[in-house]
Length: 353
Ligand code: 1CP
Image (cartoon, rainbow, N blue to C red; front, side, top):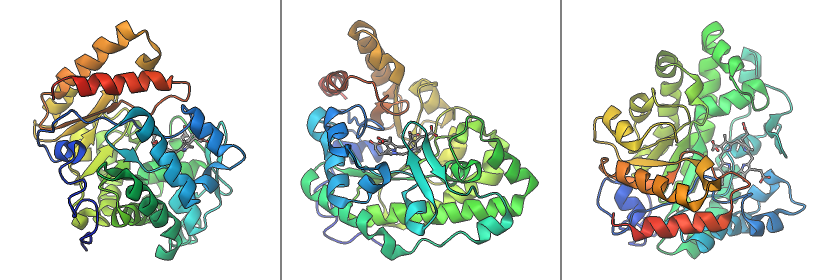
């Protein structure tokens, strides 16, 4: 399993980009920056394009997904595109009854609660991923020397939506299941791992230069539960792509206590949320892992006189790590002012790496 010779990472387009250099622990020419959820609701041009088109439908129209991915790259001059899609797309493509309800998030027609429910889950067919591969091919053709980052949901975060059937705050359903019905939990987590792994592999093989595994809700777990009931499945998801050799990033929120365990599933880079300063994250990781993060999204709405020193502080704390890619500590809030994001990018690029 290797990337083919015309892949952007192999043909000279992205291997030496600032993003890939920093992900590999090297010194880039400028500190690279991109924003989680940079594509989407904060951009008027996104809201315009999406008018009358359901979220999941927009992900499955290759020309639309490519255009939405490119919008923030053109507007902000960020150092990478993040593929416009959603963590529940592999469920949808497998045939699971799932939708994204505006103002709510992912909702399943029938939550997955029993061993029989898990046994009845449809297997994701590689053919079904063709619209994803097509969208990635269209996107990388336009991006040129800027890398595209592919992504997938980690098994715990995906399974949390599947068991609850909708977004939840405490993720009680999956956390009960992993103790009360460990075999059912393991089967579900493995199913989610394979669906996410195939989704990420499709993006990387079609032209994405790096991959990020989002375990957004892993922070609701203690370290022991994470290691016993979640890490093996996350490792299994990444087993689908590891041999491709593209840099892999692992991110979750509320994960200050989990960083070494999340690194040890076998990733190159750890994404840090806004709660932990990067120099402390670096210390917890033993100083050997490149980091991504972690501007507090709340400060995007603060006056520039407040935001600027915060960004400079993040840059200074990131110097401790062997490589630093600047990002937010979670996604761009829908109400963020795009002009502020552009100004943040300009500031980051103006500071010596
Ligand atoms: O109509 C809309 O605009 C819906 C909003 C939206 C968008 C723009 C959803 C619904 N998904 C997306 C795109 C998306 N989702 C991207 C690509 C765009 C980019 O990052 O620029 C990515 C990477 C995701 C990943 C995703 N989906 C995560 C992990 C990242 C994170 O923010 O923690 C999660 C948890 C989801 C589930 C999801 N999808 C959508 C919503 C509103 C949610 C969260 C719901 C909840 O609170 O549980």
